[in-house]
Length: 275
Image (cartoon, rainbow, N blue to C red):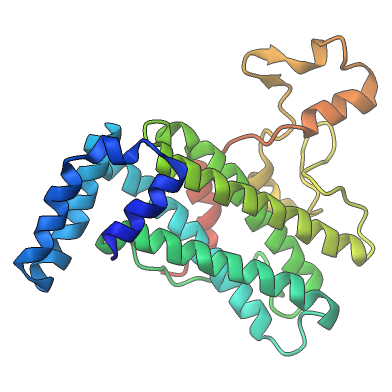
């Protein structure tokens, strides 16, 4: 872990960070004078303490959120790696898209593990068929894209659900929001690939007036619960003057991605975790 490199990167998104930690930076710097082994052992603790003092947020609470995100990223990275490894699954014209997405997911894993250090959880063993719910996921490209879309949409909502827990730490919040936006782009790209295969689908989450689930399969419905919510921040958007008629009401509803809480996301992931 290069602590000073991390500090320099943080300053790019938080110019006041230097003021927050000074003279703590000098204290951290002096740790390295005790020898490399001591320094390596002490840095994760020192970094957690530094963040807590700089932002008033429990390092444990932040780590919980980051490890939750890391588990999602492990699954997505593994999913794309396995898909790209199949000889006849992905059409040649689509491989560049999925290779790029896989690269992003691997980068997210690396980033989160670097920030967490020794606190990072290990990757579970995954069952991409979800205990048989998607039995042909590695042989049927249409199923593969449906599962990819579900993962990306779930990731978008999962990150959004954790934002309130990171409000006291603007550095981690900024990083989480950046990953959140990348996941949303992934979801749109997957929908584009499905559209190329003849599926009538919008670039964003859409569906009927009762269940927003454009994957077309019941097994994915839990990832889209409450996406047809009409109340945002206490306001019923269907009562606004600009929102009239079926078309504009549907557009207004589709304009929001609803957050998913941690418990809901973990329940969605359970079938995909073998051990």
